Image (tube, rainbow, N blue to C red; front, side, top):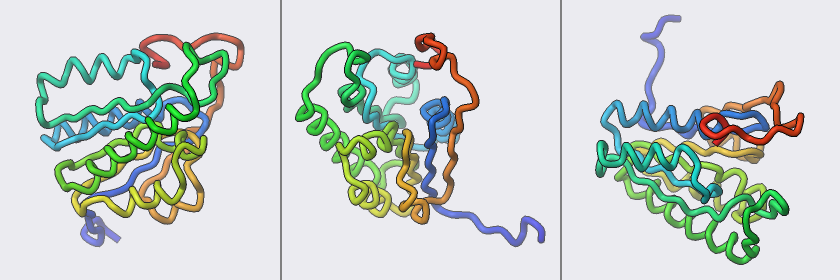
Length: 189
């Protein structure tokens, strides 16, 4: 069987999930590829609201890519993070932020204006109960025919694997956090 027997798809649904590091990093690599191919990209972030390195990077390249890149930061931080949270955000505020961010993602994925829509940490929002599996399924189904969708975060629902084209489970083999070391700026965030 040669490559002449293979076909292409107009778009795909990609999932980066698991306990290991690299889910957001992999989605940023997709963003770079799409932008390098002159594609329209929407990067929708569901959890991280604090100043992480990808926010600085996206802000800095936005002037270069102008309307080719859309960034929406909708999260309010890790849900029920306790002492890891810098400030207490009510459950209601987390829920509102997740729903507002979901609506933004739904507009981006269904409008046909983007070649790639990345929903960073959306799987966490579903796992934490801020969004439902039904909403995630609706988002996947709502995408325009030429819009690829990338979903990142831990705990992607196994019941939705049949609805995606590519799924990667980032498996942790070792992480220094387990030895009481905090995340390193520029490496972990």
